[in-house]
Image: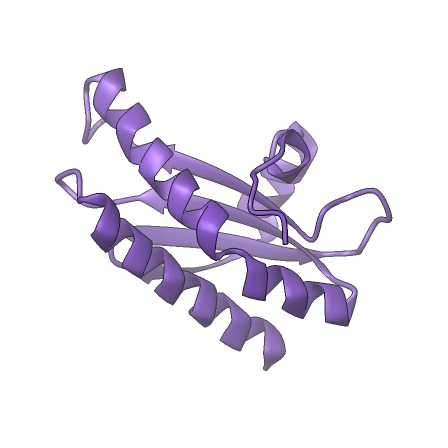
Length: 128
């Protein structure tokens, strides 16, 4: 299966982003605050649209914020498949926002492990 992270999988539309923040459910699983919203399935959309943020207040330098976002995106790209399959079988779409909340930049291995835990928790919430 395709493990890329295409433009269509990125959460870009302002109205969707605003509805995610206004109506979405959230949970915290260190180092992420995850905000998610299940939406009606539209034919051309991918099953999941995701966005990733790192607070400027915690990491003043853009270089460090971008490094953390690259690590999160890479771990998401490699582990998203089970969630996509669950959503495809249920004919659902999902909007997700990952907000990084740790005080220090964690290594890729730890971010990858935590991203996997977030995906499993999302799958549990959606299948319940």
